[in-house]
Length: 188
Image (cartoon, rainbow, N blue to C red; front, top):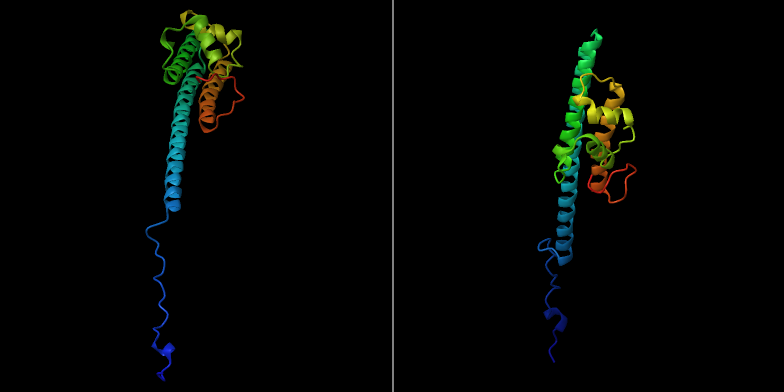
């Protein structure tokens, strides 16, 4: 027998290569794909909400401009001029409401609505809790009158509430699918 130690002929322990980062395991690819999808849909929802908020603020700015213009011109005006200014304010406010409705409800023929049909549309598609008979008559018939006496602050408040509820309800409905507290239909 050979007098040498057989263990001395063995080579040192060979360590495997360290596990590399690339290529990742299939679970990481799936997680990456799901994360990309979540970021895409969250970004899309945030962008849509931002656009709606921007449209709402634009519509409310138009409403504010109409009110500011009325107040500036009404200072020191006599009764006849004030009546004409109120009619102008009613027409401007009605125009803002119609533009908002046309933008948000392209499937309806809003341009042809007038009178009670227009008032019913406002009641059906937004929070019209401030839309009492005086304001309803003003919006439906006021633009055809030579004189009209209306509380312009009440009219402004109703329009502001209707526009806000319309846009905010749409933003809330797009971010969660539960019912809102405002009486807005599914089309709103």
